[in-house]
Image (cartoon, rainbow, N blue to C red; front, side, top):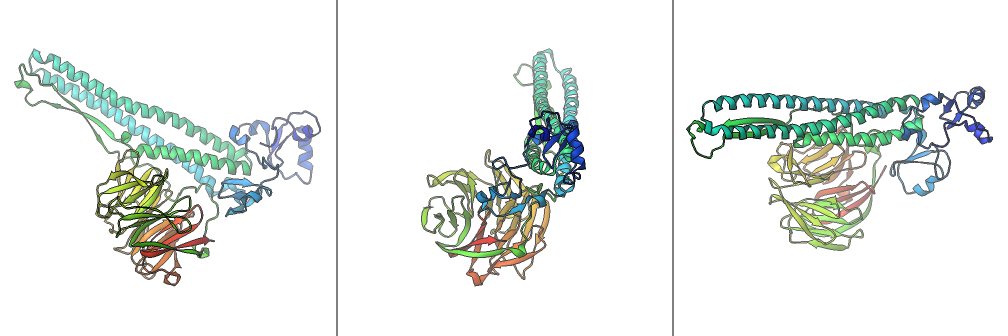
Length: 559
């Protein structure tokens, strides 16, 4: 915040202390009664919108603290840097010379309160609240069911108890205690979740109140910058909702009792009265999800049109490998290639010279960087995924999977991989639990990539590229054999444009985010012989396209 909203800025500059009664966001200062009258009559400021200090104080503290001028240079913000996600004044631009996508901030904040981006935030908040209520209702129903089942089991135990002799009284009591403990344990789990959800519900309510005040009283710039923080907060809440749905905390917990069939024949044996069993059915609760929303959609920065993309060849790289099946570019500029014929992973430096290679991990297929100086490598013939330590140049661990694997992608602590007749699966790296995403039969040469909440995978058996969400819902499918046959490697740029290798058509095409349009960007004229895989480096806008034999091509992508 540039000035003290409780004092009149004009009077303060004249060393006069007077309390402000209104706030002008365009002047970024408070005004007393006398200055307000001059302000409303002055030609330069008569069209400025003001708000009473009482109303302005209702804005969230974080919004009131947002500076509307550059804190470093004390100048008005003119641009917004997409790369660093921050506003810039004219002097700041000197430190952003290498940044792409600098945008006029006035264009971004124009009508921001009525923009689709702001509307998306409001709707997402409502959606999160609705989903929270759905989960709360579901858990309360489960509590009721648990109590109902408990009552039924108690009655069954009592009826059975009348058929046996006094010797079994102790066993009956033990059984009742076990039932009570089990019900309390399972109920406690649900109560803990409900307590957490109630707290989250309060936080969401605060968000809603803040949104309303921002919309009514904040400046356009304050609204814009506050939106970005709120967007991140909402993303956390959405991930929390998704994490609940994906874990076993939402399983329908049911307790039941199995009475021993030979209980009446028991006289002096040590048999138990029965068994208290706990089973859980997968939750069939469907939460709401705005399907047209993608990661970072909240602030609608300009995106690149596939018609304006230009690719410039920077270098030709000799991989020295035959039948390359996977590639990845590392944050430090190194390139990783996996070879299915020679069963090795080779790492090249940014200049194309050899760094090191791994030869003792068995059969290989695709490769992906997973952070923490590590890569994951799938196995074409074995049911496993190897994790390679890039610091020590050796295998760190092996994860066993349910099937042989093809293409692989990484997102937020999980690996997504193609597994032929088993479709597309996801494995959590923390506990190695496996989830089925789709059950459609895929080619043994299928590849997958991730962008926000969308997955993209190829299937060379039917020449298709498909986009779906994490629940397996198909959003679109692209199939045009006139431009793409035998699609293999796939990758996505920062704007959701999908790059795909056509092995039979010896080309690379780019598909628009909605799957409706495409364009060939690399062909055999550029040096593609038997193209197999590619990787788009989103941090540097570089596209690595790899022929299965001998060499790869590195392109710079501009708009």
